[in-house]
Image (cartoon, rainbow, N blue to C red; front, top):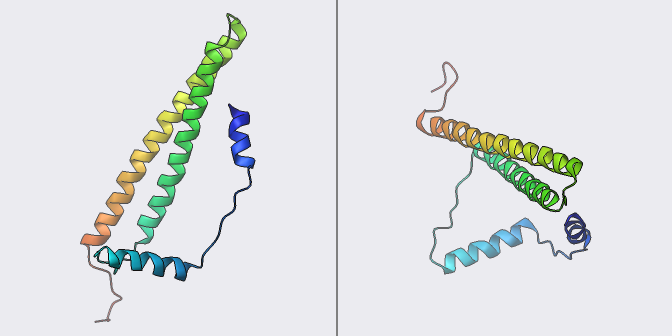
Length: 132
């Protein structure tokens, strides 16, 4: 399974990169043709950081899920070998703990970032003393 995954990662892929202006103007044109409001909005730093953390935790979750599948496969193919069964159970336990930690982190991150974004939207911006 790991070798198949490694094979997919090692395959060369051709990617045609476009300049951000070209890609954005193409997407804007598609949005306008679909009658969407394409003005867009600027995202805050908290939202951007939250999205990055969420994506990272999502990748970690998939990694631990793959680790769980690998440990289950190792357990099923142990063939009665006690040492291999113990190793598979240890891997499975560690993978489950990892999944619990990642899911907890994901929930905490969503709550914290949501609280920060909500408070920044509801509170007026601070100004320096004497500035009107």
